[in-house]
Image (cartoon, rainbow, N blue to C red; front, side, top):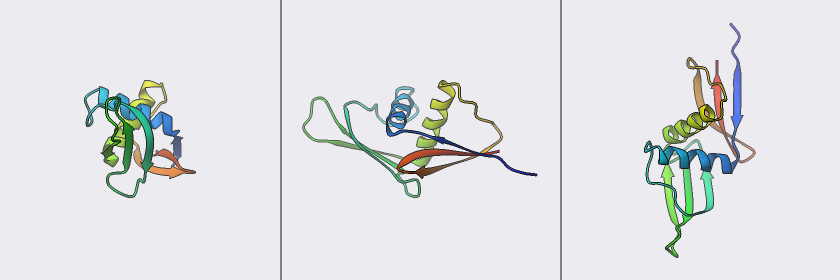
Length: 107
């Protein structure tokens, strides 16, 4: 039987928002507070995502690492919140295309 593969490509800002929403929901590390300096997404390693923030009351940047499972959960939660349908019985993986984070879905 043929398989279908979908790619949901996130911008850096969308992934940051997804990670912020996940932490606000209490499903991941500390809340992301401060100005975003950089995000380094490498799905082949752990942590898969490193976020560097400039906290409002500190001169020292703060780095927070997120595992693949946390990044995937944030992407899935973001898609559901935006009304993007995700099949329950699908294989999901993380990837990167042109420096953009991607949620791969195989049906």
